[in-house]
Amino acid sequence: MNKVKGATYLAEDAGNLRSNILVFPFYLVESTAMVKIPHALDRADLRILNELQLDGRLSNSDLAERCGISTSPCWRRVRRLEEEGVISHYRAMLDRQQLGLGVLVFVSIQIDTHSVEEASTFEAAIVGLDEVISCHSVSGGSDFLLQVVCRDLDAYAEFSMTVLRCLPGIKAMESNFALKEIKPDRGLPIRE
Image (cartoon, rainbow, N blue to C red; front, side, top):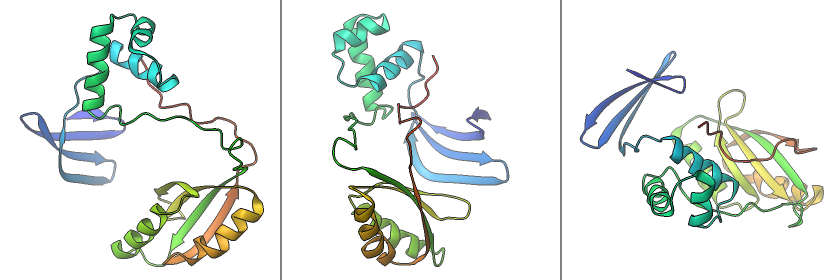
């Protein structure tokens, strides 16, 4: 058994594929999907990931220089990290205020029943809403936590009353408005 971020990880190797079984305290979660085992990440990989999180537009030569490796191995490492899914995509971070989206709201949603069908119906409806920039299924008093952006309070009130509250299976909804952003998303914590 290997320790992986708070869970005990049991695995059955099948060549380069692994069937996952994660054992959390009091829970057993088994995945029937076969996943490709990523290459072990070394210091150079971690440096590359840190630099790309800071600036995804770095040229390969600038990235290699910042990481202290030559350009060819740097390019091969980035390509491998992309192929293994460690780097899933690249994107620009936009300033929502500059785009006229002045209101950021965290919305807690409870659904009527906890059937798979009702949750799936709700999830499918949420995916098509541009104002909802993230949605997570959560534990605790709510079933889902949404992150919503709108132009202003009136726009959010309209969206909340005419769209969110009309979604299938909603039992309760609570809106929490962001007053000030203390720490914006700056990427994942990667320790070298």
